[in-house]
Amino acid sequence: MKRLILGSQSPRRKDLLHLAGYDFEVRPSRAEEIMEKTLSPDEAVLYLARFKAEAISLKENEVLLTSDTVVVQDNEILGKPADLQEARNHLKRLSGRTHQVYTGVCISTVEEQKEFFVLTDVTFFPLTDDEIDDYIETGEVWDKAGSYGIQGKGALFVEKIHGDYYSVVGLPLARVVRELKTFGIVGS
Ligand SMILES: Cc1cn([C@H]2C[C@H](O)[C@@H](COP(=O)(O)OP(=O)(O)OP(=O)(O)O)O2)c(=O)[nH]c1=O
Image (cartoon, rainbow, N blue to C red; front, top):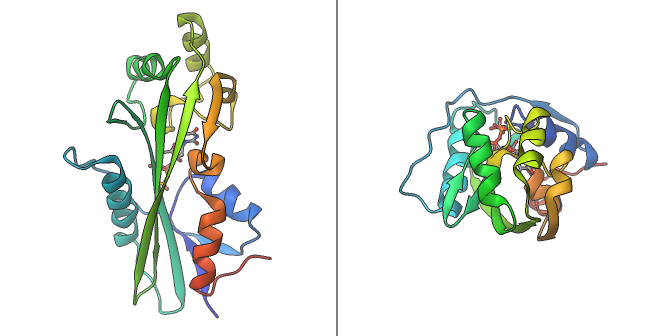
């Protein structure tokens, strides 16, 4: 019997796996994420998803799921904001424009590893400085790539989205379910 392990401390990823009906154990990776500046966004999210997996030890019957999400504007990766100024800069750059959200996923067993990424385009309405400051006040920005959460008050900035909504939240759920099935993991 195969067992699913979620290698993530993200409460969103945990909620999404529950939504898909899985029984699983959470075993977060303690590895410090270091972004390789020379990598393209798709390479970066795959690298980080793999990197998180490599810091977690696995038993024979376990299937490990790790992932990483970044926001990209003008080919530049916007990760989690370090401070208020960076959060403000991120939101100003996203205002009134379309950006890309990349989520890389890595599924590992002791024998094999499979990885893929999902790309979603998100278009923001133009934002005023007051809207940006009020949003930062909510505290929602801090643990999110690009300084917003589409599943929270950040939803009020979104004019349109092309791609997988759940991938923006942190895990491309429908694709993940299909891939996990090939590893013998099914939800209920
Ligand atoms: C753009 C966007 C990102 N995010 C989140 C998803 C990710 O959790 C986070 C990006 O950081 P990640 O490094 O992908 O994930 P994490 O540090 O939260 O968790 P772990 O590494 O343990 O798996 O930003 C949202 O929740 N909503 C959004 O709209």
